[in-house]
Length: 141
Image (cartoon, rainbow, N blue to C red; front, side, top):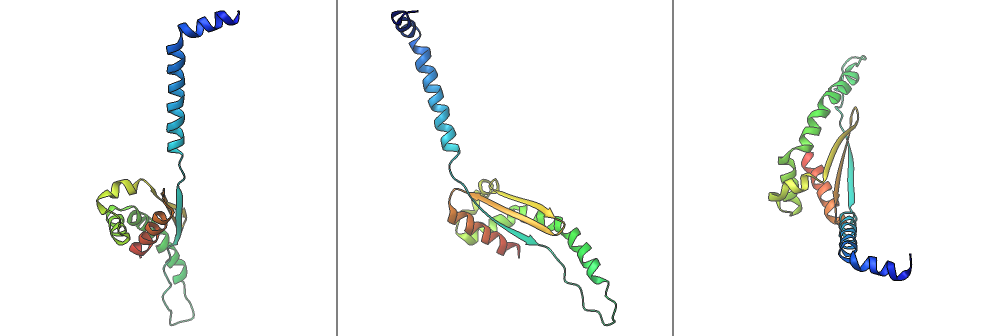
C-alpha cells in the first residue's frame, strides 16, 4: 500500500476517524473529571460500658459490661447512619441540611471490631470533610 492510497483511505473514512477521536477524548475527559481528589476524614469510636463499682471483693460486671457494649454497637451504627443525626451535624457546620441525601452518599459507617466503629467522610474539600466528621462525632455523643 502506498502513501497515496493510505491518504485516500483516510479521506473516505474521515468522519469515522474524527468521531472515534472525539469519543475517546470525551471519555478521557469524563474519567479525569470523576477522578478528582477526594479528602477522607475519619474517626474510630470505641463503644464501652464502664463496670459498676462492687462493694464486695468479687466483681464479674466487667465481663457483662463488655457483652452489653457488643450488643449495643449495632444501635450506635444505626444512630450514626441515621438521617436525623446527619441533619443535626449539617446544621452545626453551617451546611445546608436540605441536601442531606447528597452528603449521605459520602459517609461510610462500618463495624471494625466487636466494640469499634469506623466512620469516614469523603468530600472534595479538606475543610468540609473535617468539619462534617467533627460535627458527626459531637452529635453522636
